[in-house]
Image (cartoon, rainbow, N blue to C red; front, side, top):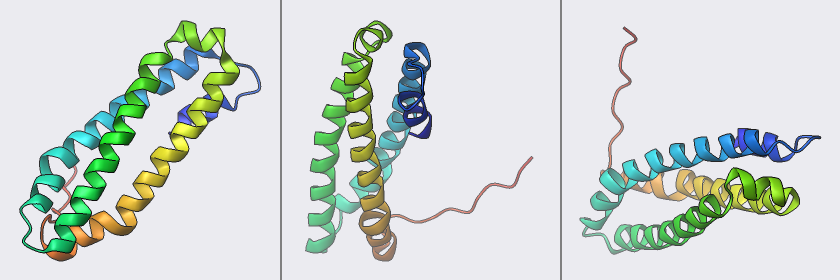
Length: 130
């Protein structure tokens, strides 16, 4: 997210740099979402605790809405479109990054601690460097 914000806040518009940052962020988010879809949400869905189940459902619905908006953003803004309307791209990207960061903050503050406390997900030990 930082690279995209740096690109849109640059003194001189750089559509190529901004598009590269957008693509890299899209890849990182796809990986993050895939892990959540594979590990976190199925574990929460198996919970017999209504609060945990409800929180998981609420977060999943919110994720689907945000993911759809993110997909549209990435599809809309290819390098040519960025170059054609830099100001709109920059504003839309700032808004989207704010939404993404707010989502991550909510996951960190509410979803993941609850999932860990409930045992729905567990931390694993970091691998030793080779």
